[in-house]
Image 1 (cartoon, rainbow, N blue to C red):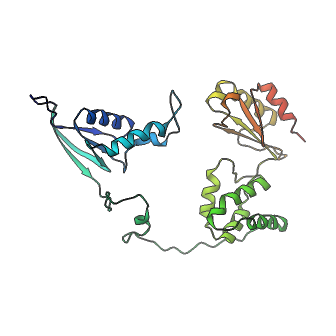
Image 2 (cartoon, one colour):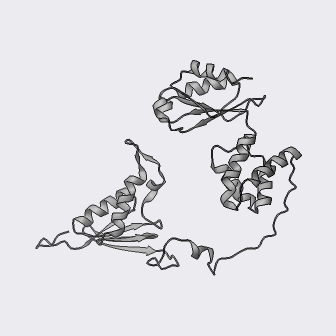
Image 3 (tube, rainbow, N blue to C red):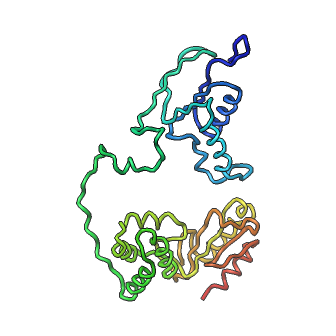
Length: 293
């Protein structure tokens, strides 16, 4: 609000520190108002930071969000009340009293660098001791055991070598057998849980046996519009399987992915390392026939 002399008085409360809340706070702050920006999360930014692209321009979400986060973070007229919740609002338009509960962080936010060391060395954290589970016996054929040991031997180091080891096993066997993952855990002294988290994160890895040829159909927006669903249906009909399944002769595994990164060639498929674009269902079926034994 403005006084009779035109001087800005009072303050403004903005609830929610997403991209809309940050922009509103910046506009008000630039107009001379004191702004209290409240968000229940531990930091500003909201859910937009979790997005890859924004509709309808396909701009990078962080490219849109980051400048506003920096401006809000350093603006003298904006006070950030993160990790806070509004408990009550009283008053009338132009004259509100708001009660805000600021949750305890147990750290000094002015000194916090976000390193996470305090969480790992917290003196009040309850650490429950559990008997380690029995490690199942690794069952591998002698030839497979020799191959996986050779792969592991290529890479020195600890956890930093895990990803290239999994990539090499996946390339050699077309999937990640449980016995081989346990062998990696045994030799590299890495918990099997950590290995499984990494193995299930990447789409290129599989914990189930896959066929000799991995057939991938892009179902991203551009490919979808250009007919990718019809190509996928044609492959399912010709191979006699559903998406995500493998033929009984272990020749083909059919998969669908959200984007391959070749929108200019849509619709796009890959068979192994080979990429094909601008296909009709009939053309895609002819290409598939080339890979049959």
